[in-house]
Image (cartoon, rainbow, N blue to C red):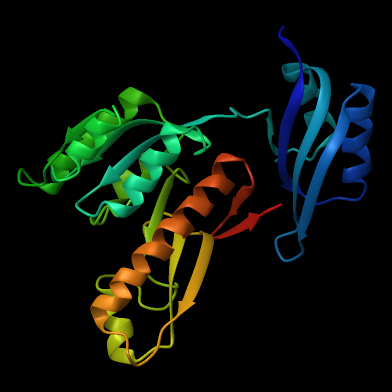
Length: 282
């Protein structure tokens, strides 16, 4: 069995019960693991316990997981040292700003993940992928949505990514597609959800005369733009902003929010519980 001397991450989600922190700490101590960071949260409504640990020391990961499962409730979800560098497939349409940011971060090793390929339903972003030496696959919807989704699913499955990132992929995914990648599809929506869901949120915001616009990164579910929220951010606007001004400002915040959400997810700081998330930011 493999042994390591390095920093490890442990994530735990289970039914809450008395003494969990003490029991977990005891197992770590018995394995001579030093706790560097510990974050925990109890959802009292759901009676769910969430924990993220960073530890240092020698450890047999398989044995450690077995020992922890013995002292945790039966429904526990536990990961010992998830893959530190996640693998992703990016889906795009025509807008470049989020994809460009991802490709730059990927090139400099600061994304927290490796981009395996980019799949687009238009060819406008093929050239930028070529510049970064990332495979680009064109899957147009001209042959129908069912065909395009099946082609996309097959391509994604062939790469076996940890997550799929919708970097301004302007198509509504079917329930069948989403079911293939439950809690694995990250989307950036150009609105501070739940306000202005669906299409043309900046136009909706302009017509409503709002004083704040924002962006929301969330996991994709069958309910359009209503999946568990990972990160959000807002910026002020005023009466002098045209709808086009809002779009331009919105692109900057979309890029920032998606980058933050990816960092949190790839660093194993996000737990999904029903239609909400528990996020340990620090």
